[in-house]
Length: 162
Image (cartoon, rainbow, N blue to C red; front, side, top):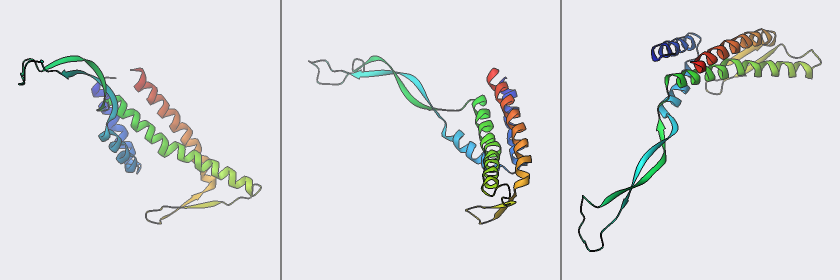
């Protein structure tokens, strides 16, 4: 995958997330991208020395190279790494959360011997908006999440193989 293809894949992933109301995922990924990643760089180190008889500093003889050292540095993410961040964030937001809801649905059903509640209300902390969830729909969403995970894994493999 060359840079142009990677840019197109990243653009399309961002577009899909926006179309599906997952702008908040993009905000978090963009924050991680702005922060960069830790890496190592080699740098030439210097040692300062003075000749015993001289009391003045000479620009010609004051510093000498001591060797090379590995230093921690902040680096930009590559195009492929940015795509991986988007894939991983999408998986967490859409797939893992659906699996959690499915698990909660199964547990609640077990608690009531199969006669568990038909709906759960999730309330967002920030705006107290109720987000009702029909537990019969959770299984359908879980199947969709399985398919999405397969697609994300295939895209991840495509990005890694190139």
